[in-house]
Image (cartoon, rainbow, N blue to C red; front, top):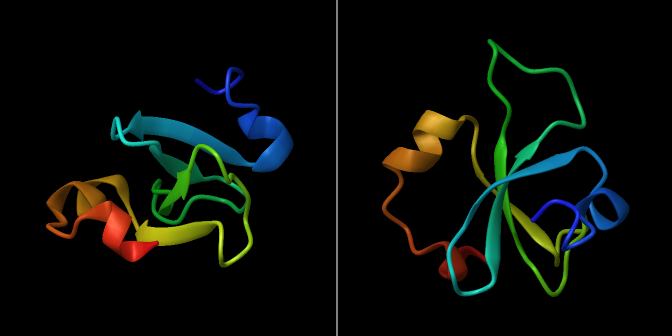
Length: 77
């Protein structure tokens, strides 16, 4: 998925960790050092990858907090 969707080209510093089947990726934001061994989780649509505010949304400060969320990820974009 990383290379198939050209993530390094469009979102340098991002690591895809999940795909919701509707075109939205969950990614670790690894542009800065981890805080307490955790990276923030963002989401971005596979057809519009990028770091601009209209392309990606911060989901949570950590993977565990992202997993605890109950919001439909597509409602955040």
